[in-house]
Structure formats: C-alpha cells, structure tokens
Image (cartoon, rainbow, N blue to C red; front, side, top):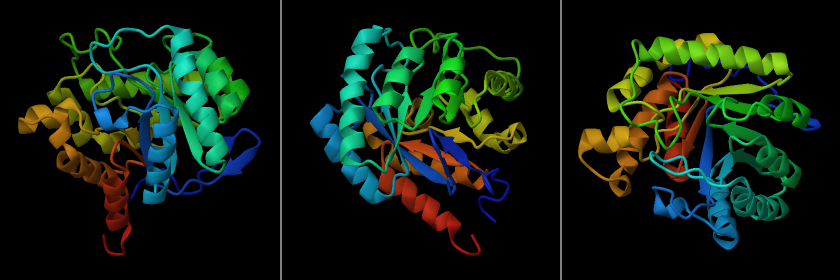
Length: 283
C-alpha cells in the first residue's frame, strides 16, 4: 500500500506548551518574503502573504513555511537584520489572522528563529542543520518546537559549483544521522529530516536520493521532501520553473509512495490531491 513504512504512526510533536499529532502525509506551503525567489508567485509582502496563506490553508496546507533569505543556487547572504525585517511582520500577521495555523520559519540563524517563534511560528526549518549557526540547536531546544534538519553541501552561494560525492545516498544518510544525534543531545525533542534535494547536488544525485528515499526511514524521524519546480525537473524535461508543476506532482507522488511524510511545495492544491489519492483504500 502507498505510504506503508512512513514512521508517523503514533508520532506527536511538542509545539511550545502543547502536544499535537500530525497525520501524514502533510503539505507545507511555501511563502517567500524575498524579492528574488526563483518562483515569482511565492514572493510575498504582508498583504500578499495573508491572501496566499488563506488560499493555501483553504486548499489543505497543514504548514506554512515563511522564509526571508533566498536559498536558490548562487544567492548572496542576506544580512540578519534584513532577514528579520522581512519575516517577522509576515509571521505576526499570519499568526494574528490564522492563530491555529502551523507556521514554520525557514532560517539558519538562531536569532531569527527565536524572534519568529516568539511572533507565532511553530517550527524551525534549517537548511544548514545547525552547521551555520552553532547556537541554533540550543535555541530550538529552549523554544520547544519541531526542527527540520536538512542536508546541504556548501552554502547557497557555492553549492551548485560542481558538487561531488562518492556515494550520495550513504553520505547524506550519515550526515543526517549525525545531526539527528546532535539535535537530540542538545535537547530537541522532535526532529524532521530533509535530504536536501537541489542543495549541493546534481540532477543525478537528486534522482539517486529519490530512488533510495525509503532507506532514510531507518533514521527514525519523518521525512520532508522539496522538489517543487526545481532544476532536477527542469533539466530533465527541458523546461523552466513556470512549466514544472506536472513534474513536481509526479515526483511528489513517487516520494509519498516511498514514505515521505511532508511535501514542501509552491502549489498546495495539486500536492494535497496527490496525498488524497494515495490515501484511498487499496492505493
């Protein structure tokens, strides 16, 4: 059956002072409070964020992921204060309008993570798995929210400059296992793992990870995947991000069948539909 083997049965997350029981697979909608996200429709200011969030929640998004520093290949680092000024007003407005929505802050900076959670965020999504800010693990442990650890080779500015692996599946698995261990030792109760599709990986590396995604269940935590309109689709099909929705849905479907628990996407409706079809009896 599709979805068999997902390590979600009986999972509970501690979000600040309450326990919640996520029902996988879930869809995480992307809200980019940046001027340069590769997918123009995901770029938002406060007003646009409220409108897009309302639509995503109505379409079935379980989590909204807000980021203020682009992590597209070749992007320059955004100063901390600028990142904070982009995301905190958005999170405050979203939390005020949709107080029951799960909001995630997409940042590698502990200070931004703390400010975002204080403003209403319920989760921290860190592309660096704590490698770029040594205070991140202790900060998240103090905040008491779930934490996404992702694999990335290099930094967004350099990660696509000839990434190299001897065995990409084994190396990503080992990295994530070490970061899970370190996160738990720091006191983080709830970890989610992301293999980091497109972050310091060629198209061949990405498909190797997808083909062996089921191996990552051995790590224990739920798996988050993000293929949405990325180069592995565009390069394979000879298209641009604007035409990559169908390819995204295909890869999301494969990932769910291999046990992915969370789909991070620009297009919520189509991802929710894929999840619904794969949850049907006999799927």
